[in-house]
Image: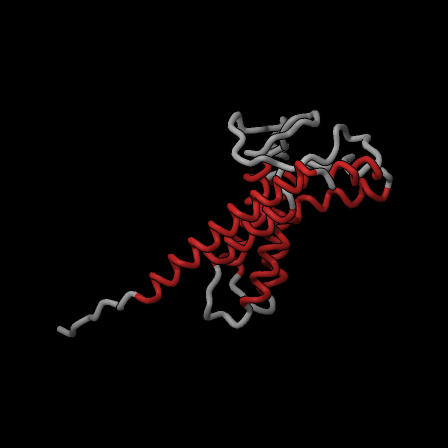
Length: 194
């Protein structure tokens, strides 16, 4: 599974692709895209409270059903102040779902392997047969204690995995920025009257 750093960079990339530079609320859009890209991993919090951080990890928060509900709720609240409900819902859904895609294509060594991608229609966990990301290691089982969980997070493997995510993520963000600047610098076609 990817680190919060990798998820945040992908949330930023979603913002770059879907955000509008002319909107006065672009900082809010950026913040929400990054937050929603990380949000499925907030399922560590209740586990931390009971001393087993991985107890609820990769559960319902790692599903498309949850992504639909959370992103729609955020879009409704956000559209009251700033935006258009449907455009923002699509943007927020992509940011949340980007987390699921990264986890789907990352390694998982803790049973049950994968994420319940199609919940509530199915509880079957899915994991892609091809792992693209190196992934971080954090718990061998759902009963791993907090101290062991923290020790696992601070490993050299995880530091290297985060470094790779930063390199790949910044490359993608740089490419998107370049493509947008090239598109913005092209002269607009002139239309001639009848």
